[in-house]
Image (cartoon, rainbow, N blue to C red):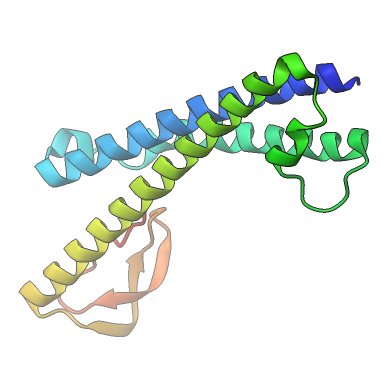
Length: 166
């Protein structure tokens, strides 16, 4: 595969990844807002609403990783491949498009990480509030559920609390 073809594919992969991460961030934000607004109908959807955008983002990231490895083989770079270093080696007419796509993907990834942290902190805060409100403490051996609704090993006295991570 030529460097020009590989650069074109990398641009497409980065643009796809940026779109997928933007969709994932929007889905996480909608989920968080439903939680904050206590919209039961939206909360009842469960984490399934995040499954498709998450899988799309993971596929896009895997494709980008494959192309990055291919760039390393084609250009002879060993070790960690950084987009900034690749810009000097790609055809001049594609540099700005590759740089723009890379920046877009980076911004989308940062927004996704921020939204994930906000959601996680919100769930932690809700868990702590509920524990303090009802005086719940952890009891060894009782069953609770993790964020994927699979049995975990600890439970709260007085009832189970589904502890999830967005």
